[in-house]
Figure 1 (cartoon, rainbow, N blue to C red):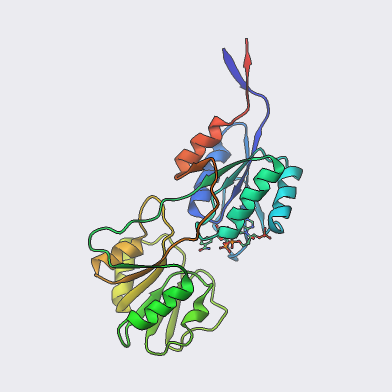
Figure 2 (figure 1 turned 60 degrees about the vertical axis):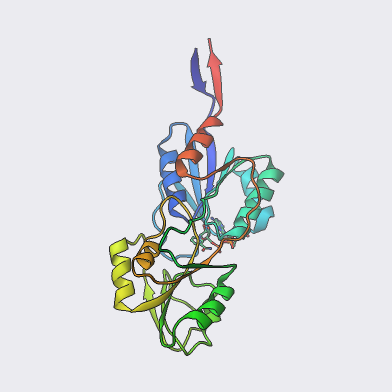
Length: 262
Ligand code: NAP
């Protein structure tokens, strides 16, 4: 029996993550697959993505539904960041409305290892409150949760802050603050050196999850630094949920349109 493809499968990857880029690269290589990656447009110089790319919001779930129909998308893969809950919600609603298959790449949360000193919080505002009361007087709080929510730290003059973002922050910042503009991936050695250089006493980060724990968390463990970890929001349940790029590739392949020839 010969199995032949009827037509190209069109896949829309909702991205903005390293996983989404890896997925797009693999799908781009796959014969009979046309991949389009969608980026929100948050960074001025996004990391290049193989295959076609579109940038900017769709205009809510209705806009995404329209896009899926107009572009005749066969498979929608939600490979966005675990904290990007709006777009994941829209992906669910739109896939249902347009009758498009949805695969959700949901990374498993990082789990504490022996030596980790993690305090879990629900959001960035709570992280700021906990940092303000638990960090030692004049200690340095290293904040790596992105640009949004930094105003929560603006009233704290008791501590020094080291803030790392990709794009320059635009809102209010704490009075004693050093901003570092940088984009990962970072090595454990470089993160350990950064913690030592600024004498960091508390790390604030998101539990972004995934295959290997972030280098900054390993560095914090090495230096016995307490971590305030923001837990991800609840995301909508999706029937086809995978945890890795390899699983997403396998799931996407399983749905390819094929026809049997005698
Ligand atoms: P969000 O709150 O879920 O989304 C807000 C709005 O941005 C959405 O309603 C949508 O606009 C637009 N949007 C988000 N992702 C999009 C995408 N991939 N393609 C087209 N439009 C998109 O998301 P967010 O937390 O602001 O994150 C924005 C992007 O940055 C995401 O794609 C995410 O993967 C990436 N990212 C986020 C984080 C984080 O910590 N939040 C970290 C790393 C990377 P419309 O309603 O107009 O369609």
